[in-house]
Length: 476
Image (cartoon, rainbow, N blue to C red; front, side, top):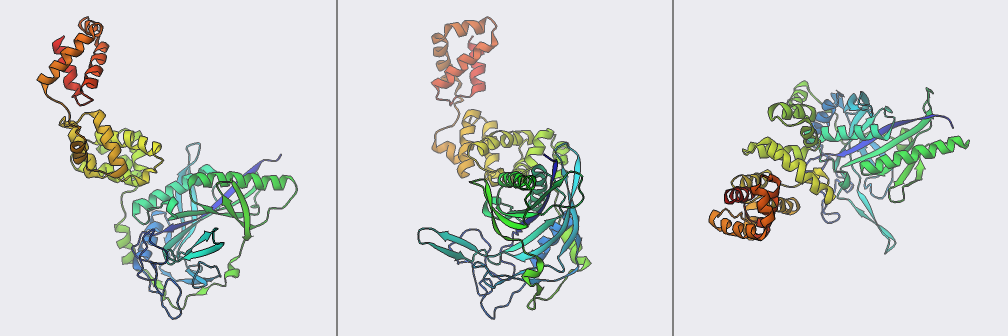
């Protein structure tokens, strides 16, 4: 068998975090009853006219600047004509001839740890289509136009990636840049970040690319990795058996781990693009560009370095926390409320990540508030609750973001700091465990753990462990 190289380029669609759609004032909020976030413009009614949302342009510029693109200061919109049931106008407003951003790149780390540039061919603005909901019971397809007109940017890479690992590294880098900018939440499960994979294979050393296919319906990093591996093997099997790879669009079924052809791949002329006559060209001044650039936030790499130098966090902690913007926000906001950075980090690195894994929650979706985490930490510090109880409280916060003070009161979890009462309980524990008591008297420090454990059991976990430890030593 010959040695083959995989060549991959991506088209990444990102829904922008504007409150209203790209050409009308309808809400972009996810969910909602079908066809309730609609108006004559986004449902394609005759005579309706689009009006451009300025924030869409600013988000597109911000992403372009952060990915080292050239900004097209005179750009415009074009109509991409095609019929599909969830496309109400029978055309999509997009940018073909003058996209807003061109010739950028992002740097990723490859599997061997070296830096690699993945070039960005262009970033253009466009509107999203609606959504088809297939009703098998009634043998019908229903159209929901809530998503129609939601603003998108499409980030088109050059075919610079050579493995699934490089693709995931590139997507992770894009996701972090866009999230830190606040341009999108990039939730793959809600469709606010979607990737189409263009893939071909060629013999190692060959200069010309092979015939590429495009795979759609990829909404998680894991499914993207599986689809790439499957399509690579499918194309190699075809070539090894003397067959041709057809240029086509394929639909990936992640449940069956199988892709099947949807249609032959269209060329630009099939869409009969022409400039949109209802929208004026966009003129981006130097001043406007400078204004957008001045709002650029601290990105992940700088934030990670600052956490290490300013907060004295271990590199491992800083690496994990900054990998997810909501966790970085939680960390900084909790520290700002007067808590020790390492203590806050411990709760994020320990209990937060444990519960994310157990509850199958993406760290991006963590909803614990800084105010409540700060309250919990302070209750431990002032001995209101012990750490064992705090873990139970944190789990309730993680699931429902409950107020920890209210939760502790309602569940009678306050720590017992009554020395005289605890002494009586400890005396009884010592009487019932003479061997452990003798071991402690004889200098076996570890034996005190058994007595502490029995005391905690007798107080239903409410005793202050530090105080229990101190009183046992005094009594023995």
